[in-house]
Amino acid sequence: MSSNPEIRTAAPRFDLAGRPPSEIEAAWRRFGAAASPEEFCQSWLELQCQILSGVSDALVVLQKPGIETFAPVAFWPEARRERPQLSQVIERALREGRGLVEPRRTAYHMAYPVRVDGKVRGVVGLEIAWRDETELQAAMRELQWGAGWLEVLLRRAADPLEAARLRLNTMLQLLAVFLEHERFRDAAAALVTELASRLGCDRVVLASLERGAVHIEAVSNTAQFDRHANLLVATLNAMSEALDQREPVVYPGEGDTHPVVTLSHAELAQNSGAGGIATFPLVHAGRQVGALTLERAHGLRFDRSSLELLEGLAVLLGPLLDMRRTESRGLPAHAAHSARDFWTRLAGPGHAAVKLGAALVAALALFVTFATGTYRVAADARIEGEIQRAITAPFQGYVRESPVRAGDTVHRGQLLARLDDRDLQVERARLRAQREQYGQQYRDAMSRQERAQVRIASAQMAQADAQLALVEEQLARTEIVAPFDGVLVSGDLTQSLGAPLERGQVMLELAPLDAYRVVLQVDEHDLAAVKHGQKGELILTALSGERYPFVVTKITPVASAKEGRNVFRIEAELEAKAPPRLRPGMEGVAKIDVEERRLGWIWSRRLLDWLRLKSWAWLP
Image (cartoon, rainbow, N blue to C red; front, side, top):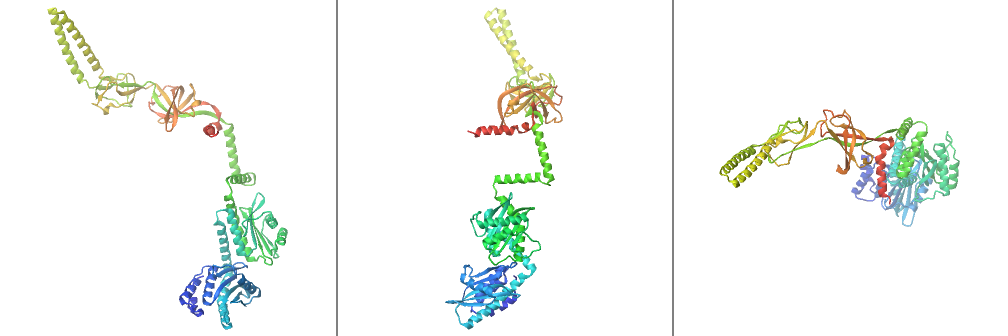
């Protein structure tokens, strides 16, 4: 409801109780800002009680918008909801259709009906303090004038578009009650209880249909119920009757043009004493998923507006019921339901895509089960030279020259490095001069025939000759040449010219160009399948377009850790002559042919081995 300027200007005229204008103004503002029929009635009742003096209890009972059920919509004060004595005068006013005043010990009970087009659509009931007849009549007139606002509300709701909007709003509110609970049973119980309250039903029962059997999920205003009770058994029969006919069943009928069977509904009405029964099948995706049965008290039938509301609610509730029920199932139930649904699609009519997919999966399974292929062990591989010669420093010295480095191809006798020989040249000159000195001493001793000096000089000459021969040998080794044709696989002396060398220090590594071996890093899970003499193929990263066959020649029984797993070194030889583009250090992937096996076993062997190992570790 939007605010009305006329309401604000008329407010002081009703200030019979002498209340401060500020309270009355605040009440009128709430009344003018009411956004729903419930807020409208509640704010109107609060305003009415403030205008009249001595009101201790008040209640508004209206025909709910969009349906023909009477229900309380506003209370004053709001804290107290049970008013048995006030309800009696309200029910009497509904039956007689006139205003009533009943005296009590210290107060009066007043009730005034609200009419629309001559038909009673609601009642306002008040408990007002004791007063004389003149003031009582004045209070009744004020109540009569104020009830005109409720008539305006009911006339707006009587408009077809407004009634449809209110019915839709009611349906959405009911669905919100169903969806706000996490557990399915709690949601179902809250829904049927709210339905019973809003539509004035004695009992509302919600059931689900699964595998041809109807199961009761919730009964209104009942937390626990016995599914084998007579009334619930009769209710199940009524639900089955509606589900078998696949359409709603209302009892008693209103002379519908499309008659339906109502035997079970008549039996339920006889057992429960209900005045009206309605059952609506709940459908999702063309299949029935449940049913909703509502019962009204004796003498009350379901009007057309209520049936329209329930019909729309059933359409919206079917998918939600199926979704919430599916969510509440456990994992085994989910699996069984999925299996049954898949089998229905597979064996039933239609669903060509499902049938084609199942056929392809079955064909693939048969192929994997019976087809065979070569079981091969894959491993990382690396090319190494069959002979790998290390060129070491022949003595302590310094690098003077090195025209080659790692990766260069060299030929036999080619200079690889030259060491600094200046110190050796000086040492050779010194030793030669010393040798001449010892020779002169030897000749002088011979001329004087001094035998002792001859022997000493002779020994010194021999010593000098030996040292000189050593220096000559070292000078000959200052030039380091290639011992055979090959490629330098490591070493770069061009970056260390003038650097000191220790005797035996590795300077360069040389490998031949025509003799290679393949080194495979086989995982420990596959080692048992590898045997000496098995063949395979190698593809290198640098030469991915070519395959090189090889033969396993050696299995090293020593494991090493690589990237968090244990691997064993397997050596193999290339069957054909190594191509010129092959170089030591190239890496790739090698596959060793083991034997013919079924494809299913080849693809699942790792998983089977893992399961076998884990089961052995877990089982006692």
